[in-house]
Amino acid sequence: RGFFLGSAGHSLSLNSSTGGMPGPAGGSAAGLHQRAVGSGSSSRPSAGAQAIASQPSEEQQEQIALAHMAQAACKPGIVIPSQLAFYVLLAMPLLVWLGCVVAGMAMFESLPVRRRDVQHWMLWFDTVFRTLAGPAMPFIVLLLRLAGSWVANRQQQCGQQPPPPSSSSARLLQGGAGSTEAHDTSGDGAYADAGRAGAAPAGAGAGAGAGGGARVTGITAPGGQGRGGSWPGGRLAPTLVPRCALVYLAITLARLLLYLLHLAVQGRVQSSTGGAEGSHAAAFMSDHILLGAAVNAGLQAELVAAVSDLVKMEAWGAGMIGQLGPGAAAVLSMALSLCVALDMHFTARFFHYPAESAIAVLLGAILFQVPVVWWIRACFKQTQTIDKD
Image (cartoon, rainbow, N blue to C red; front, side, top):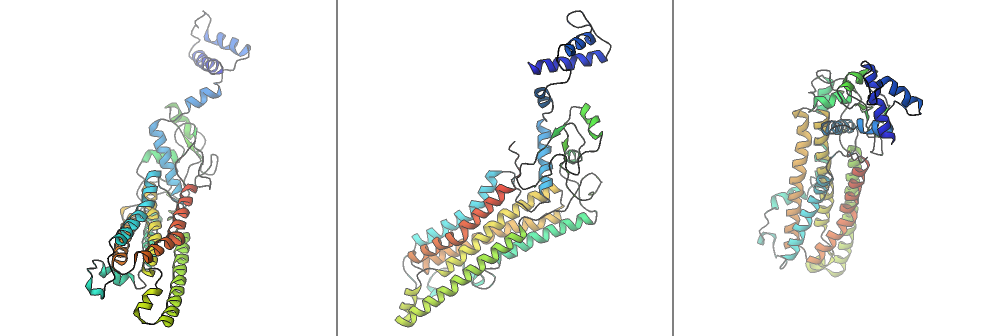
């Protein structure tokens, strides 16, 4: 009832402003409007009418999403619009890892007398992986992402930053069209709340309001103007760089501690039993597979973070040179993760009993891979860019 009364009052007031056209009952629209006001009805549209009138179109909703992503690009959280894509990126390295190692355990026949007796296709990689380069692989990918963000921010500071993918989303960011509020649903302040600094200036939405547009208020990225003066560039923030570095460092130290403990136990048992047979009997697990699990966990996180950086740069308007860093990081993390999994396949197939490989896989999952998956998922939930309202 309020909706229809409000709509009627609004249309009658418009008629009265155009010359007092007669209403359906024979009186003028102004008279009908006065009677409606006198009877207690308001000429102002009801809340339901305002809500329907302020609904943005599909194109405007897409522009609002771009505005949210551009704002989130200046935050260190994970920005991947699709939940399905996020979980595929998170699960793919782990599934490839498990498939390769389990296949190697299933194909185990016996331990070789000499290493040269087996056909180890990943021996070239294994030679490098056994050095300090193995534990350093996640840090190398992290440095690539960091370099790409530095280049993109450097271009923006020098005035070389190109405009964003959609110029209309830039106009929405500056508050140039209509009257729809966009709300922060990230839970950690990833987007600016309505009414925060950067809202549209007075009268900016009046002209666009006549065209039936929708204005995004308070969704402005901080910082100066990009090239062309139409995009508030802000400063691009790479994804979880300090926290990733701390997590990888903790994984490396924990794996080193386990390796030293394993060597101590193996040496004690070998000294008490003696012989090569006793030495192998002390290997209750595969330390090489445990190292692979630790490195795989870091590469798994880097793959998600690199794709997040690519999404941020696209929404932020970074150039192709800046995107080379996270792009190379994503490709390198996938390639290294696959090489590690294949190397562990031959390790489980030729150099350890299945029980030793299974213990290493289980211990690596409990200590490294499952905690990293849980942590990355929690970070994604905190800074998710999909508006659920």
